[in-house]
Amino acid sequence: MKSNKPDISVTLGGLHLKNPVIAASGTFGYGDEYADIVDPSLLGGVVVKGLSLKPREGNPPPRIVETPSGMLNAIGLANIGVEAFIKEKLPWLRALDTTVIANIYGHSVSEYGEVASALRASDGVDALEVNISCPNVEMGGMAFGTDPEAAARVTEIVKQNTDKPVIVKLSPNVTDIVQIAKAVEAAGADIISLINTLTGMAIDVRARRARLANIYGGLSGPAIRPVAVYMVYQVARSVNLPVIGIGGIMEAVDALEFMIAGATAVQVGTASFVNPQAMLDIIDGLRQYCSENGISGLAEVVGSLEA
Figure 1 (tube, rainbow, N blue to C red):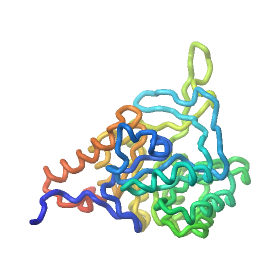
Figure 2: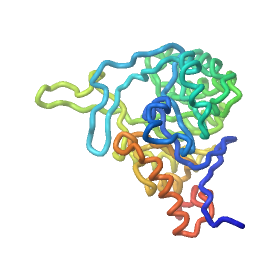
Figure 3: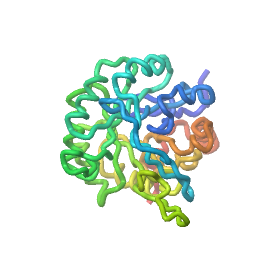
């Protein structure tokens, strides 16, 4: 008997996700931290905390500050390092019935290649997401993601060191994000995700001190959603790669904005701090939207913005 239940699965550059809702990197730990309250196997995918070649403690506290309609974070990419991840975290993740994506970063082109190489033979990692918002020590601290050539070089070396699909996560802190997107597409990226956080800061006016020990941090949450939707719209129209939308998604209607603008899937981050069940609520909301509007599959929604 044929089911009338809408199909909310999606396909992303070789990845098949049961639904388009993915836990964003840095907001869901390594997955096991949320396991008592959210079953990761119900999600379309999980992106783990950004992994570096060696363990990193990150920035001193305070590292998170609430802002109007969002939050600033300056965690400093704290993580246990790729080797410890493979030994201590991956066995648990491997048992999940969901797509596991390892977010990776480096401070030089060669570091990106080394982290990718370390994960090459790791059964249980389905794809790599490349964070190009990190400072490039070889170019005086400029982020890889703000320069098309640097972004392309990182993409190329990761592709050379893995046989897994490569997702490149774009920074919004640029003049023309389409230029960066085209550069990483030409360099071999399989999927593009955007946006990473916007740079911002908050000040305690009484103490006349920055609220973050690092002075500035990354702004996320609903405050950045209109910017993110617009950038997804720009990129999705300009490249021939699937796009993952990120930025202030709190409810199903927010996810649908991104999908109508051209995203095939979405990542949810800040919402999990407010409501740990947010991703499950969004998945239910997408099913309900499809049922109420006679949509048999979410593919009908992607890029359906009317002129």
